Image (tube, rainbow over the protein chains, first blue to last red):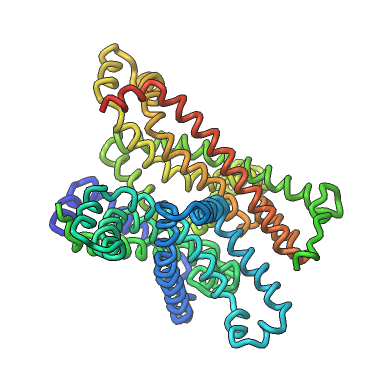
Length: 259
Length: 242
């Protein structure tokens, strides 16, 4: 913390900070912000939606990434090809296209079957967020699977052999040695992947999920303002990314390096 | 559902959408390539600012890359699009022209290039730092001007180190063009959506577009790997000696 303060105390940085502050004050005074108070509850709901989709898709995607990575490292050949093909397919096409395929394509397909329309799942499948959740999860799983594949192969062979020599069963080797060591190697890139995932969430607005971006778009349409809502959005995403980076770095530092 | 797929919808001529899809695909490639080249130029400038610039330039470049990497591409693109076209229009009016129609392709390239530039700055900065410092000092000792050192020594020497990161950025550029569909550019994803919603053949069109994107990714992967092998041809011996 003291480090940051001393870094900020350089004269040119103080001048730049003062200029930035002056710019912010000018924006606050000269631009039109009267729409903000009445829209705060909606913005808050949108923020919660964004965070919920982020957390849910990261958690589910990570769970899905483990088998994807493991199959590629040590699975039988068909499974290896299947998971490699899945990762290539998802990483080679735009997320927006996948999102629209699931929402418009699957949505229209499901509506054709009376069995699905009458089932318990239909109230959920009629909404947009399950499709958004599906697309985000698959995307995160494919990218994270690639990272975990590298992390699993990067664990030194000697450690696994030592664990086996101690008489551990394969499952115990995985649970006690292989997985924790791989996770530890993957932690720094995990932060980057989560930030990338946060940056993908506004795409959900294109399939009518009311996340933060959708709320801002609605405000822009009703108030006919071009810049103010967008600038607020930029500020909020900057803060979110900053908080996420700091939190994940704190988490990373709590994991002992063990070297 | 599969029996009812009507592949004649993909025909190249008017009742089919194949021609429109290919046009959108070509537009996407143009946008990606233009944005990518612009990103490289910004990246070289940004990396020079970060490595050789004064205190203020260094901090400004840092702010630029931080903001680009923290804010969603879609939001940045919207902001750049409105600010860019607004500034251009005002400049044109200031010079006495009537408000000009901003060319869609140029605006799209600008928007993608500005986003790509943030990432390219980091890639190129890392690659320049991987060049042994003695080589740059030797060039300076021969009395080359800073620009000449950049052109003759630093840029060629950093290329092999930059290629893996820049290859990654090219993949991101091709996929980021899809985001322009949200702003209303008629590139592949947007055309696909129009075709799908007017014929209701969602799977057919979205899967065909996916195949086109995937083809572009796979083909450029092969080309980039060849280029990397070529750029690395002097480095392989050093790599093996380690």
